[in-house]
Structures are given as C-alpha cells and as structure tokens.
Length: 290
Image (cartoon, rainbow, N blue to C red; front, side, top):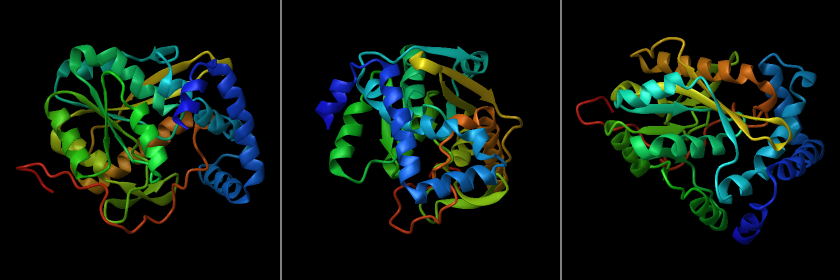
C-alpha cells in the first residue's frame, strides 16, 4: 500500500480528486447505511440533500487526495484567509490551540501551518488516532513524518506532549468533533441534538491559557489547491468545563455552516462512545484540576 500511495503522489491533484469524486458517489449509492447516516445528519442540521449534495463527492476527494498530500514533494498550493489572528497568536508565545472539524481537507492544513510557522515558532503537534490495522498504522506513521510537524497518538503520552508544546509557546492541533471513548467526554448539543463530545480541547485551553482558534481548509475547484481559513472564537471560553464544551460545539457548527458542502455528513457524530481502555486521557497538569 505504501508503494501505491507513493506512486499516486506524483499524479495531479485534480486527477486524484476527480477519481475521488466518483468513488464518493459510488460509496453513497452502494451503502444504504452510509447514505442513511449522511442524510440524517444533514437533516439534523437543517439541510436538504440538495443543499449538501456536493459533500458526497467531496468526501471521496478527501480520501483520493491523501497520496498527494502525504507523499508529495511539497504541500499543494494553499492560500490564506484572515492571517492576522494566527500571526498574533503565535507572536504571543503562550501556546496556540488550533481546532478544526471534519471539514474540507484537514490533512493539508497541518502541513501548511507547519510550513509557515515552524521555522520560527517550533513544530506543530497534532493529535491523531492510530489506525487499528498494522499496515494502515505504518502508512500513517510514514505519511505524517514531515518537517515541522509532530504527530502524537491519542494516549497519555500524546496528551503530555501536547501540554509540553503549549507550555513552550508552540502550537497544537486536534479535531474537537471526534467522538472520544466513554468517560473522556460529555453529552453536549450539536445542531440541536446531544452528541458525545471530547473535553480535551476545552481542558487544554482552560488549563494552559493557550490562544484558541478555529481553522479549516477549503478544497478549491478543479484541483487548484486549498484556501485556509482562520476564525477567532465568538467569546472567551467559560471556566466551566461543560459550558466550554458547548461553546466549542457551537464554534464547530459555525464553521460547518460556512461550507456545508465540504463537511463529512456521513461521520457518526451521534454514536454511543465505545467502552474500552483509555486511549486518551484527562489533562494532568500539576497544580491544576485533573
């Protein structure tokens, strides 16, 4: 699989995304379960299928473009929208917490941020959930080994690495709408329905004082690259954990409504959390609450 991905990395981005668009529709039409989840989640947010039809193909693009993003010689073309808050957050040197939902191309976002800021401000540390299959895990490890980018797993060691990075004034990134295991989240409204939501993002912000920004990467048409967006929070995060989690869910909703055509509506956002040994952990900061 690694050889295949490296071979596809030389293909034009537009060609890979065109293939992905077709695969996205094939999957949508072939899988009744996926189709039901996609339509139900979109309807929960108030969208008709006509409003989010493009997201079917865009989801396929997300998968097909990975070889180019992971193993290309350099990140694809990226343009920036609203850089001043990012520049100011890095200049503050008290840690930067970057949150992006399952929207657009979140893989290229980490690379672009690392390319722009790591030389001066240190590496970007990103949290990811390792694949359960060994072959896929090895592929991810190879893909995410990029200059200025440090990927850490969703376990206690990874969380500690994120805390250390924030305390050094560096940036960390994670997906706040990823459903955590049981015991590592709270039930909080998301598009009007309770969804099990991680507390890690809110805890990192509360306990380290890092500047918190919402970011996402919009996929441009015809393989022209990506537009990277940065948004400040509408209000400072509450010191109450449940309230802060609710605030972040509202921020995620706000980003999705900017471009619902590129959200992963098929993602099982409302699923019951899995019960297992902890693969994430609370944020154990000496002198702070656990």
